Image (spheres, rainbow, N blue to C red):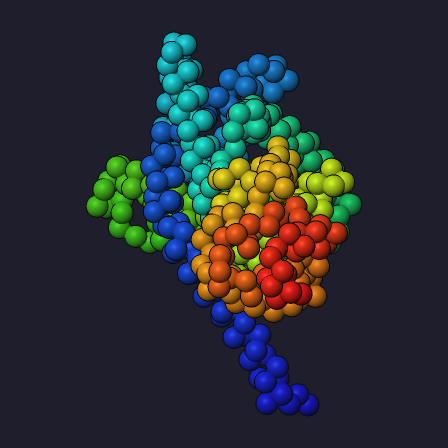
Length: 433
């Protein structure tokens, strides 16, 4: 027999933790302005959808092997991604994209620019969710968008050709499939492909390294929510009076509503991945002040630079700096060119730490004298430099800036500390020992 009281007692903490998690998720969704961003992306989607379809058609027309694939791909997308109103919208967009392909070079260039702006807005929104202020620049940005606009359609076409082959194979396999595994596979195939698409979106678009395991979890959950949205939206459309009120024009507000809800689910999934990553690293994070956190981070950069290695987000989080805290400090460090982001999404040191002092670090993060005076609690992750930092808090009475003018190179190098202390006046040197 189950002890109901014990079961309730064991489930209660889990329920509370789950409630806090989704409470934080909703709070982040609102604070990041995802509703406004979804509305803006909906508006931009209306302008970019036809150019994107025109680019897709152009890419397929370059390869005779993909003859007819564009129409099949379009049918598949609208059947799986757009409920109820999909057939009418598909016809309108197909006509628009056909006309777009007959434009002059200047008009075609304008359409490509519109599609490009759509992609930059998506990246900007995802970067805001992850707290990244620096967008991709130069060749990295160009290659990402070029891949989306060119390689993306070709991969979709190859995937569709593969699924067509599997469908033809299904007819043969069904004769030997007594338990219906084949039908089960094909019924869940749209969910698998949608999950893969969302996972790629969450992992590749933000200008920072997103843990793939969290992107995968977010991609699957978003795909499930997307399928539920399709069912719910289809039911609402079938049982509402939109058609009676708007007549033939009903397809426009319904499609706008659908695109807006779709973007809200996608942005909600991005917030979920970010919140999941933050919670996943929470167990290894300590509560550092901004100054102590940035010193801890720069100590990691110094150690890595000695061996020519780059620094990852995980390195900073494992050192005890919370993921969100690290993202905030990362923005300040990149803005002031203390560190730089590589094309691979890692980080390298840009400043000579011999020319940067503790006082400079304090000014960077806006630390007050009260924070400098506060004795930091020793943690197991702290290096030897923490002891030297603590010594100098006793010297604030005379000249804080002078005594915190020790360079970070010296602070992180114990062998140089004694030499620097000998240069101080005798009474202050004794005081610091």
